[in-house]
Image (tube, rainbow, N blue to C red; front, side):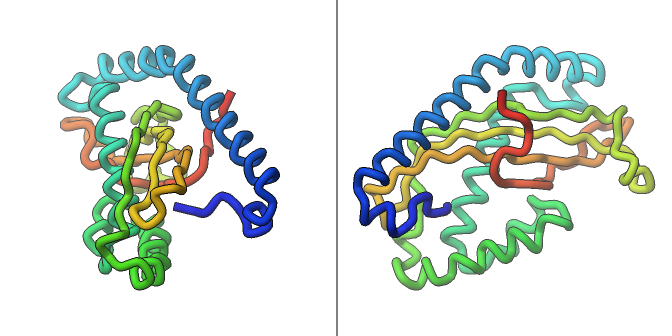
Length: 203
């Protein structure tokens, strides 16, 4: 939900066109790289699910489908909702202040364009696993709070806002989820621990 071109770029159509072309090339190259790696990640994910069982750990496709739904919902609500407290349960305690502040930042946008125009129209979103830390490898810093599992999705989206249909955006975001791990029941509740530009290596 950020503008990707500066005022000088629009004043120089040639420079703006070159930047746009370079951005689109980078977007498609990274997307292709994730497609190539996807079978490897699916294999790793399937091994973890087989180790703990489908009743304790979600399937590869289920995780990616849920990640896409949560990502789109969060983005849409941050842009359109006057009050974002209903999003708090989706985030870790550490991330919530950042999410809350982001929602407040869009108040001027909502006032300027009107709530009915603050909608995101998604052309598509493709999700790929980009990280996975199984429950037997907890972060030492979380030792006192028990075991946890961390999984990340990298999402490639093409969309535009209702108030700017001509401004089609190509975005890449990593969404890192974290859940407490119960030895008896497995994943308890996925919560967003990070959302933003790619943090895992892109080959």
